[in-house]
Amino acid sequence: MENAEERIAKALEQTRVVRPPKQFLATFGVTNLKYFLVTEPIFAEFDANAGPESVIREGKVIAKRPEVVTPGYLLNLQGFGDEARHYFQMMARQYGTNAPGLMYTYRNEVGGMNIVSGEPETVAQRIKGDLDGRSEHLAVVIRGPDELWDVALLKFIYEFTASSVAGNVGELSGRGLLDPDPTGVPRAAIERIEALFRQVEGGLDPTTLKRELDRWGLFRHYEDRFLGLFKKR
Image (cartoon, rainbow, N blue to C red; front, side, top):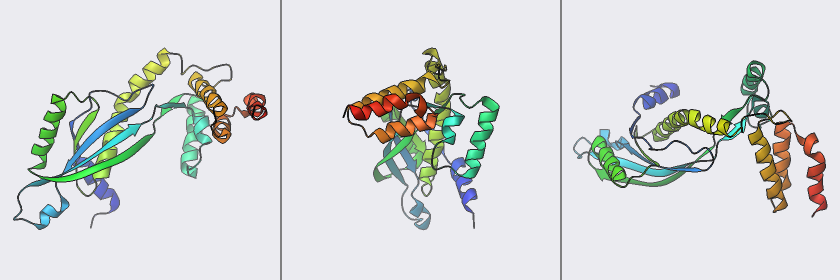
């Protein structure tokens, strides 16, 4: 019997992008990417007399605007184990505590699932042709295994992110957002903090701003301004 790692490795080998998106991830906005994941139904192997069928899973992968982070910032995030924190410490020693990098955040919104007649490859090509005909730039067609279809989706997300990084970094760098401000942290982080101050003045829970200041080690720098928010209320 295959173990989990072997099953995942097999699923990755079976995953192929039939039709890639025509755009990369947006640098300064949210990316809404439609996906169509076509598989052979897992029950097909138990019914040799049935005609060819395919499972089509539809959904959306929503990518938030990539955030500029640093090894020092990552060290202050919750939810990482000791090994991950040790890795961040190694990064900080190698590149510097405030060396900028990008962090991507995704949400998967699962849509419908349909079983249609036809071989999976034929069905995938049909969907591809329909998307091409409608010039759908932010849509992907993936062929993968039925049982571990979510692994196939994750493989695509990883590769799509990797292909977008260079362009995202170039656009951020071109606007000077990776350059350090006088506090030593990337200017993109300062802009994010300024936006949070405005949002708190508009009613956002101040805890969100306090948490971000702590992650950057900037609470002392902004302490008077932060406390001043409560005097206005």
